[in-house]
Length: 251
Ligand SMILES: Nc1ncnc2c1ncn2[C@@H]1O[C@H](COP(=O)(O)OP(=O)(O)OP(=O)(O)O)[C@@H](O)[C@H]1O
Ligand SMILES: [Mg+2]
Image 1 (cartoon, rainbow, N blue to C red):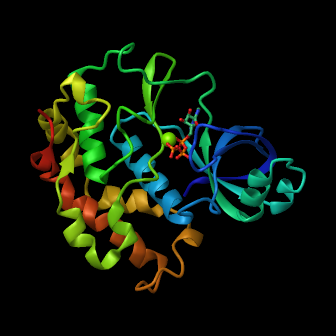
Image 2: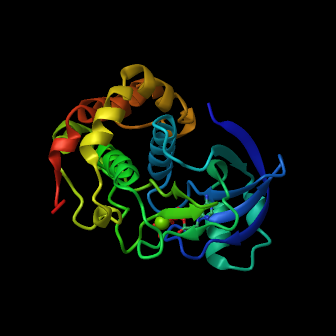
């Protein structure tokens, strides 16, 4: 389970983010990047963030720590910005919080060299979760304290938008033509040899256990949150073994 904290103060919107994530302070005095249930694709985006970050962390990749952030919509009442106010008002309850990496800068492929090993691990991970949001236009990679950190995993696991077609969708290849780390010659074969054996049913059960129940209720076709957790684990388990052979656009 993720640590639970309560949002106490809305500080400012992070203007770069399409979904208008905000910076908030919580009752543990931490500062978090808050992602809202009331934004765009809503809670599915947040579920994807949790599954990917908790999986990435267990595979040894750097991702900011996650918490759940309880939001009382009255926090939005004093917001002068209409868009922010609407977002806060529509996001009462459990939202996602992410450790704010203060002073982090966006990854610049021309300024920061990445080793083929590290690039390989990240590309392999992105292929596993089918991340379509790591392009050179918008890499969603931060440099913090001299190291590369992964953020923004809301646009992954496309199959969770249509569970009936999940198996076929998860069987498709992954294209890295636009991937921000392609120019670094990612060694995906080495990454697969190292990481694929770690992606077990047990590990995925631990990862999916971190998804808050409230984001898993009332999903058509599923009676319980546990059933839906298993549906999240299945395609990842199926892909882990051979996804490196289905990465396209590497040349
Ligand atoms: N944990 C963090 N620490 C520091 N800065 C962050 C963190 N998370 C996000 N940011 C900053 O906020 C921006 C927006 O975050 P993010 O990409 O997660 O939002 P988004 O709405 O999904 O964005 P988009 O869809 O536009 O890529 C990032 O590009 C980054 O500059
Ligand atoms: Mg982003």
